[in-house]
Amino acid sequence: MAYDLLIKNGLVVDGSGMPAFRGDVGVKDGKIVEIGKLSGPASKTIDADGSAVAPGFIDNHCYYDAQVTWDPLCTFSPEHGATSVIFGNCSLSLAPVRKGTEERLAEFLSYVEAIPMEVLKTVEFDWESIPEYMERLDNHLGINVGNLIGHSAVRHYVMGDDCQKPGATDAQIKAMQDVVREGMQAGALGLSVSREKGHFDPQGVHIPALWADEKEIFALADVLRDMATGTIQAGGGQYVELKDGMMRRLAEATGRTVVYNSLSHTMRRPDEWKIHMARIEETAAMGIRAYPMCSPNRITQDFTMKNSQVFRGLPTWHPILLMLDEEKLRLYADPEIRAKLHEEAVVNKPDSAVGISKTWWNYIWVNEPALEKNKWMQFKSIGEIAEKQGKRVIDAFLDLVVEEKLETRFLQAENNIDDEALSKILTHPNAVIGLGDGGAHVQFHGGYGYITKLLGEWVREKQVMSLEQAVRRLTFDSASTFGLYDRGLLRPGMAADIAIFDPATVKCGKEEVVHDFPAGGWRIKETAEGVSHTIVNGQVLLENKKHTGALPGRVLRNTWYQANR
Image (cartoon, rainbow, N blue to C red; front, side, top):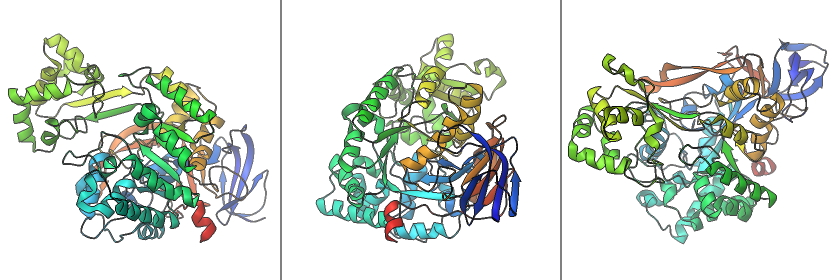
């Protein structure tokens, strides 16, 4: 047989979890046609000796909704071996949208996911409906993309200015169902909702999805039940799952897979993950598909008080965060204002909307002081510094912020920093690994490096799972969760999405700043090491991190669309 692409001499890790083997992979017309010891002419041959050949990784929790309109590769996920990305998560999407309301819709995505509004203002909204958005993307893609229908966008489209109020009428719910149905008929991969109480708009008001009651959420999910297709994704699902089993109930009522954020370890409640894990196992024993997502990343935030997601939603802090630097400095130094800031961020309930607790200040460190005289503070927590200075933590923190004119770099980290707990979370069979947030928090961290971090740190270095298990977790598990049944495995007849990497060197590299966003914007890039080829639908997209010029990606569509097109 003549092949379009022949990958020779690789260690085939096929995504099933079965033992890897030495072999060749033959590709023709965008599909895998044979695996084994192959011969025959090929338009392109890759010698993969010393490398693993795996299904392309599925970056399953992203926010490339806007970026994909100017960046068809959704950089930098493909550098880490991702061949497909899924966005529209946590109720946030850029379709549907009425003419004249585009900027307001973009504000929700901008503020929740820390994507500069100046960048989003450059997006040319040449669509209104979900099908129009999908068709717009399908014309120019390097990587495969799948989109979820965001509840906040749907509520905004149907209810207008009333979308951030409770109590949608029956007529409004029916109209929202019609919008969701239209999107699902066009092939959207599912519906995303949110119960994440830390998600606000720039004015400090909860995003539209958070104003919906259970009746509304279940009604929209019923569309997926009736069409027997699609996945339901929920931001903040762990809170309501632990409270009253809402994720389990939603999955049971609809018969659809529910995947939600997240199973993680937090220093605030160090044993809660065990309680959550027991709940997950109960749900699985009942035969119900409600799976939390988890991440191999330590969840950190590098910030200054010039630009910070920390303290959002707290009534006095929130408006100050939006002010000019001079006004911030004046208010942070004001004793009366500081008393209110202290009340909200120190004297508070441990389970406040933004998750601040009384021990929280022990997990904010001075990462880089701006002044030489303060170098002694580097890598010390605000709690430590306050104790040494004999001050309240709020004074130790804000005195430094004011003295260094907002230039101090802080590091906040309290989630997923217990390696023993995280190793148990990552190996739990009913948790879906992902949650990279690619495209979001662009000036704080990349996130998409979770793929190479899992393969390098957790597989090769810590050996918490085998290479075969890790590849399955990054491919077949996500493909199955989101209904991508022609991807996630190296098998004849499957789409030829392939990643080639060196198991001995693959890792997530250092972060660096790149200035490649519209409107002069910059972002943090997580570099990848050890990934030599990213192949999408049978064409080499990246070779040694260089784009070949190919644009073989497509919009991934649900099973209803595949059966009825």
